[in-house]
Image (cartoon, rainbow over all chains, first blue to last red; front, side, top):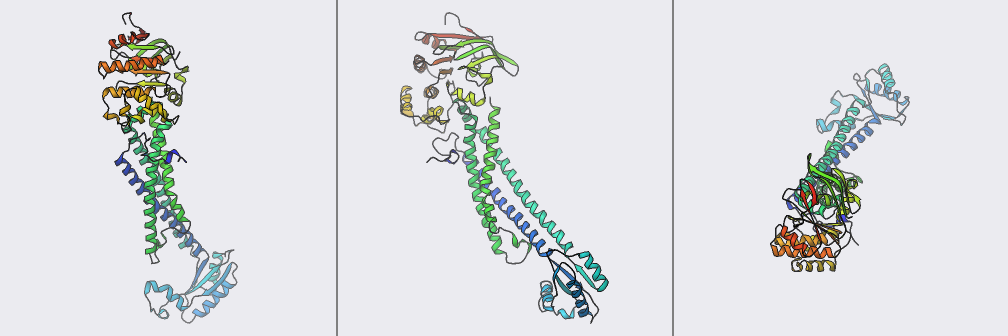
Length: 296
Length: 224
């Protein structure tokens, strides 16, 4: 069975464009570098997207009430707050955090073995929102009236900038992928134009024997598409390996822990080589046909 | 008519090089085109294989109006025309047989078979089929160009100073090949300033001689 002409090797006996070693290697290398960067940009965009979603989801369903009360009045204030919360529509559950839980929250900053009891810490009440949501402003007013030391924090002021920052990071990642695509198209176009100029004699001969523009363009298109595919394939493989290594090495809970792909997202990275091939095909074909049309 | 000029003119950058061309080239005829260097012989041939298009007037090649042809149509028509240049160019990375077969293989129309062997023998290059073009002598290149020009069995053969770079013996040999092709029904048009070649041809074939003078194509004097 014959392969489509695009996939026949460029060193086949019928290849009408002479092989060009250095420029070929340069294009393969460039495509590999671009694909490598595209993998990381894609990983960054996807990680930022997941981060934004995780933060939004984790924080949007919960709220906290901080209770600062005079010594000896903490328990009464806490009971009063819990009573208010129990009667507030849209709140699914509310519970006061234990000393052990508060210690665990502070441990990353103040170290282990902390005597939480000796610190003037506010009592925290964790509020779990029902699906219908609650009226935060109304609850704030009620708390201010009935338990003056109680302050509702519905995390909005944390959630919004975090989600916005993560959203911007995702946009930058996607923008980087788009810029890499444009840069690849520009590089392939330049390489194709250079090859066309270097092969002016070949083109003249082909036109003399009656080759159509599309036939001449195909000779260059096939070569550049295959080179870009090969380079992008190698670059993507290296990039995916790099992302995998970053992901497995990071053990700490830091912001970049999530850099990488999850599940089906690995398949997205595998789309980079064919996408690069499509870009190369389009760029070479456009450049070749435009150059040929300038010839009589 | 395989080539028909009617009041055709062409030029470069506003300068008219050829003008008021009225010429009919009948199928199977043999024409010489002569004139001093720079008179426009090559431009005339370029018009005939549509490398140039007339700026004025009409030119029909193989029955089609050149000025109305699309680029693909020009390419298709060129496959019915064989062209030999003085400095014939080849694809230097391909062996001779692949170069000669190019008009057949480039658009995948057909694959060269035994015809290629016959053709190589006919032009005396049977032993050089695997050679790369830079390895060929001037005479071998001209014969290879002739073989490439005729492999697609074109209806018209155009030759631009085909004997310019070769010795007289080789020139006569090439001329005989062109005369043979003409006897097989091909229309031949040779641009040359070699009057000895024209006289040698006229002793063997009924050739019509045209001269370019002052940008116009006219019948040559009777002594040619």
